[in-house]
Length: 337
Ligand code: TXA
Ligand code: MG
Image (tube, rainbow, N blue to C red; front, side):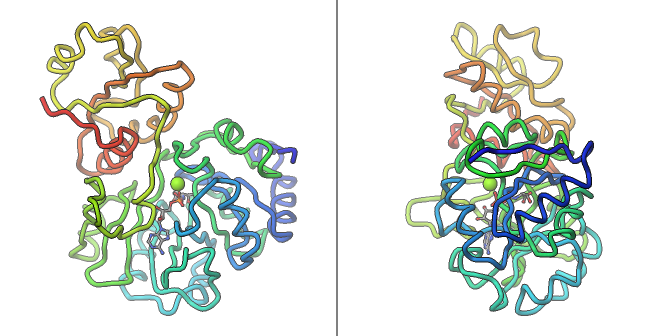
């Protein structure tokens, strides 16, 4: 299959008509969102959704997020809309927030991975919403990477993973945020944070009160532990390089890696300390780190890095999202100095 790329910032009408045609025909289209690129199919077409798992090499029990463009689309996707979801949607939709609810019978099993719940998000990217609206269907879309790889934050990385596997990529340049949406489940009380993102835990608790944080947000799943979200079970964001996170000051870090032949994943402004390094944002800006992290992981691979030591981000606010991704890409290899 030949994979076509259309730049939606230059060919807006063509991008919308081509994506709508393919999506309605049950085909896959990679689409830009403000978080990362998604690999989309008509969410209510089970055969189309199954193609997503095939193209990504994704385990079939790992459910997908359904993307909508208007609040009116929500009720038919879910059994009921909890009050807290309404409050959250009012404040954070459209935006980098995914909410899990009991599903309606409209949702194919392929979307929910056999669970009785469904994850829904209304993206903020105006391009994403225009694509959904023009297609006229809700779109199931996981991140548009091969299963296990870092999520793609530009069309170039979608193409390198999906070339020949899907008919169309819609290019809108770099993603504004760079890490995937916050995922929170309202299928139980109190709600459970399953994946941190740009909508922070602090912002959520301020709005709706108590939120439980799933153990796996900060920890490796233990032997026999049941994953609150199937995605937690699987290897994630893993570059080919072997990454170790070093907790401690820059001085501690320098002392630790002295004499080692390695690459370093560091903050901007620290480059002069290292022979071989890739930066991921500024030390005091979690947003700039989120912006760069997945790209930096892919750059390490491009440069043939084998052993990598990484500087550790702050763990509060949006830093929780950055840390959550970094510990997975490092296979939970963390050294505290
Ligand atoms: O920002 C994002 O969320 C991007 C863009 C494309 O919207 N999408 C994304 O999808 O990151 P994906 O499939 O890579 O991650 C979705 C996560 C997975 O870890 C999955 O296990 C979890 O959400 N998830 C989806 N539905 C769920 C459900 N019903 N219950 C528990 N976890 C669920
Ligand atoms: Mg993903």
